[in-house]
Image 1: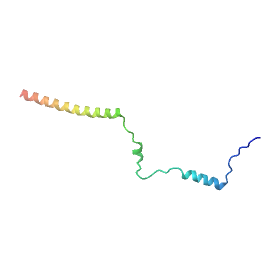
Image 2: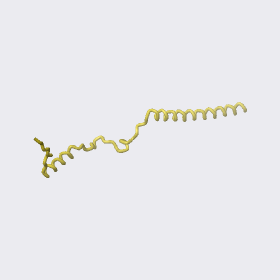
Image 3: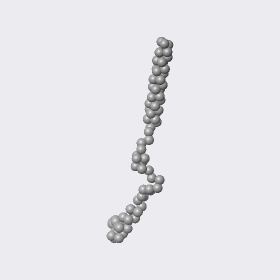
Length: 82
């Protein structure tokens, strides 16, 4: 005995209903509390990038202090000469 496998037959109304049913199940984006595209695509810095940024900032502060100390040193030398 041979079995014959036949797919389900659909009418045009059934096919339209099926497509509508599937499309209705697709979630729509929620506009409440939504982020802008820029915020959504913003890259979170890695730990290494944060450390590098802190190092550069601290380095810039130290360079300013060195310049101030050099100026003070020069002023003290001038005072000694006078």
